[in-house]
Length: 141
Image (cartoon, rainbow, N blue to C red; front, side):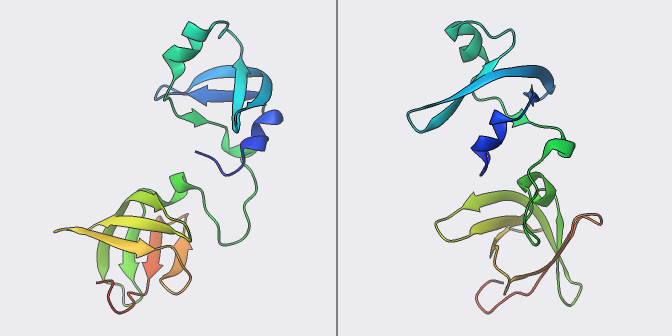
């Protein structure tokens, strides 16, 4: 999951799967609208098939610099959500991509709340504290 596939052209090493196994990137190429990576030690189609579906991670120090007010999904997922009045709502458990903006899925005590990731709703994101402050517009609660 990336909005910056070109980043892999300059990435030297990445990590795959839940155990974050390191792989050196030996090369990249475009194929049918996708980026194909050649990883060290992955020398056949069957080797590559065994890695299918695994999450690719890069070190934080090599992350693409985002514009102010933009965040990586791993920074948002698991974040506590509260209203501008300090009322606890729940935790961000998923992010849905829509055509115009992302939607944060917040697990509350009794249900799920869908919050559009727009400035009128998301008032503050404190990555260090792990807290998102929102203004529940009419119709969201």
